Length: 120
Ligand SMILES: [Zn+2]
Image 1 (cartoon, helix red, strand yellow):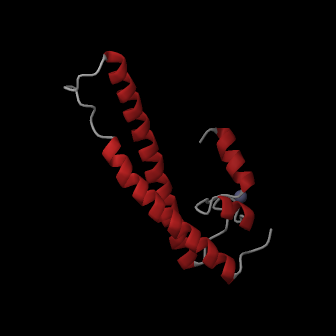
Image 2: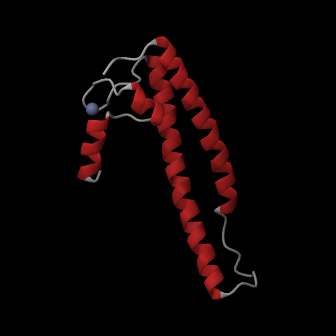
Image 3: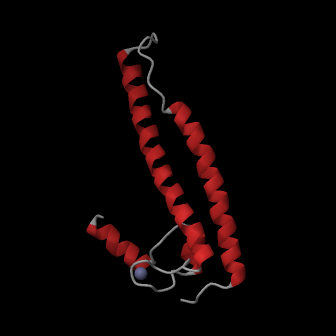
């Protein structure tokens, strides 16, 4: 795999910045819908369970958004320090194709698969 040139880095930086503002906006929206389920609302038990379920899911996606936002911030910092685009595990270039698909990633596809299959 080849290393990234200036232009590709700039493109990925823009992708990351877009991602950061999108995630930030979604997070604000998510916080509103992850609020407590009103116990005084005249809704049935099933509807309440449904609402709790949605609240649980909203919270989970809220957490994964927060995690992803941190990864985006780390990636942006890595661009500034010149470490961006290299696998944190093996040090090889991650590759433009994978970075375009997921610009905040820190691992090449091989290491990612290894980490995933270890369940970490
Ligand atoms: Zn690797």
